[in-house]
Length: 217
Image (cartoon, rainbow, N blue to C red; front, side):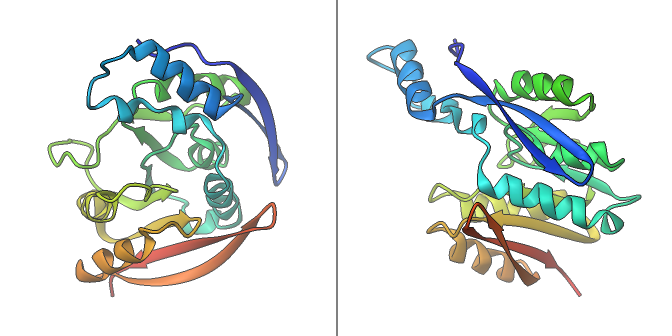
């Protein structure tokens, strides 16, 4: 069973909207609490339960900001966020009238997303999705986006393949990354899949971030 984590409220303003986000109060304490709840012999897949989703990561802030400044690129498009966590980018898109589907594999994300929808009076559709699973029936999307999703060795290839399965012809992939060690491998995987990309630097609280738009000619 996933433990009940101590939370706090953070606020971020984009255009005329102040977003109220319920986040995990202390990630280290939350991980320790999870380990205690799992006992001395945890399931080998217990790592997938780590509550990284409960932090408002700078990459998610950067993606949300990019969305609020580029609504013209999204109007009338079908949009999906993978690894949504707290769902700040999806909440932002939905607030501004974009058709967005938030997805994540962690079983507790739906609860946090529901709370944050309520805090912001915004409704966002959600589906639990493992991007390594090619049997989903979600269809194709004009924009596939994600933030800080490249933090394990297996992620560059798995995420690139998942993005390609979700993307409609002529669509774009938007990824924000803080410059983790697997970024270059992911760029290589996307290039092998036939994607070109453009790069736009982003800064959140003096931290430099990397926003990539992937597309095919």
